[in-house]
Length: 124
Image: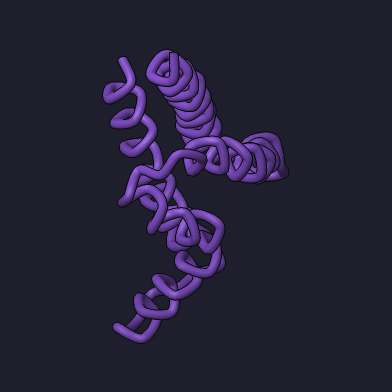
């Protein structure tokens, strides 16, 4: 269950970037007319994803506390997606973000809990 929870949390981690990217380009006020506009959208997506990007080295190494930190970052993005879901435009993309973030939070928390239990059992 430990590796399954890690994998599900990681899939949701990458889906967060996909949803952020789609959200950057899927707006009525955005006109994509050149490669520069696409590059600018990618840069904005990376800026919006800075809290996720900070976690990448720890996620690659699968360090002890990184999933707990992922849970904290999920809370921030959960608020962002809730605002997008229930804002003036009532974005379906925001609803997808809420679902992805909730799944990610739950499995990151499960992974953290199981890992702490496994480490406690190894010490005994």
